[in-house]
Length: 535
Image (tube, rainbow, N blue to C red; front, side):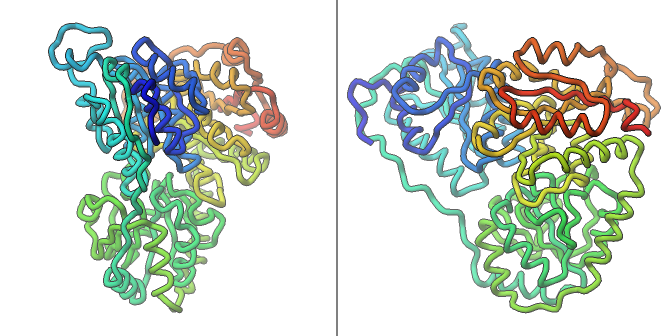
């Protein structure tokens, strides 16, 4: 791309992002991003005004989660970056491709401690631990290379977020020259020897099992085929939910937090782990008891010898690798009893629910029946979502989002806004608890401004109930978990949204159905203690 001699670096950067396929940016303009803003006026990129940079970061995260394409947040230096950093931490934990693009103080002031506006001693040093890389462009010539490096990470490596900062004096410099879009790399392919070793283990397995994570979202067809050939049960992480249809007779959904599933996993002699960390955030135990030989498929070489060392370590893309295994495996003797065992485990789980989980399941059943099959659910960190990980069936990947990795409150609503903007023709809902909703409720205004037909299911249990339950379990007197709530209906209406409180299953069905067709967001408050959930 030949850059006009009259364009500044800020303007040219926006033009370059457009060439890489970026169509939406999330952020809040500031005095340090004015050259970027001039560039937006010269491009077709849509700018979405968040009400806090944390919301902008989550929206970029939600855009990327739903679409698989990189999300972009554009923020000022200093507080803009630190406000967005919680969302960047979430993207890092869950391997989501997000570009955090920011300004910085003038290049000649960096590190001098002069007390400049929005000064941080080391802005990229602050973000480095939560990014694939973080860098400052100290000259116009460095910008195209850093942008290219970011999109190369997204395309060819474990797709974690990237932070690029451009000082305000560099942003204002001329950007003449050749800023070409590079050809992006492909993900590594497995060797034939590795594929054969994996197939040998799987063929000889007495009780094989498959564990899938978010890194396998493109590999559902091949993984389902492998499971059927072997008669192998499939356990998903929260991010891997739907890669194998939750209703498939071999699927245990994202139920690794259940003791029934953990006990079953102990019996496996070979485990095929695809695109998953086998992390404690899905199982709620520090280390799963896995007695099997493990075949690991991952883009991250550090995953091969962590808590669960690999017998066969394959660094490669999940889709390419599992397709190669499915092809090479040939016809295998499927383990006949697995489907019966899986059905029994599902039945055991349904009969061992706590009182709260029973209320969750009643609500989730109404939602599942009311929502189109392809609805994208963006979950915040709340108990209704924890239960939904195993109790809300989805038939495909990227329909259920529960960011268990970083587990930060407040992500649900802005993530849903990003998802709806990425895929406007798809139904999208958010689920949040009363505590988590309070972290980012101001983004209701953003959703209303955009006129998004977005239902927000507000699960109100009058406090931080998960922590209440944990305190009671340890016989700790409740502290800091029972604060008052606002009038959520009045609050949502003041933010130009529809809002209602429901008190029976039919009202919930009707409210969700109407909200998906509405002219603005709809807050639907469900109180856990209402009689219809406790009868």
